[in-house]
Image (cartoon, rainbow, N blue to C red):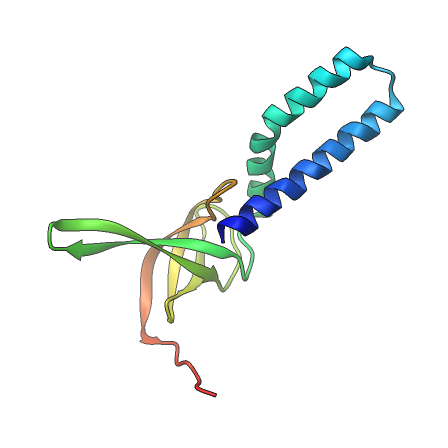
Length: 135
């Protein structure tokens, strides 16, 4: 899950560097300016990646982090488990998610970042759980 997100960031970064090389080949900026442009793009790339995630949104089949409140021996706490989006949506919207054999509805809280997947806050879940077929 985490490795897929990091791999996506590196793909994005390689495309950004390729775009810089295209700019370098089109314009004669000088070596000093090219190095500074490369360093600036490298430092700015995580923010550009988060913006690209915002534009993409959450798609069907994406891995999400499902968070819900649970009672424990010392009071209430927030539990976060990995799940899969069964529908797509944008921040603030409601989507269906599947986690641990349960189908639930949740609100998209954020799109995540380089390491973490999008976060979905559990609103309610169906009483019936998914039945796994044994083959």
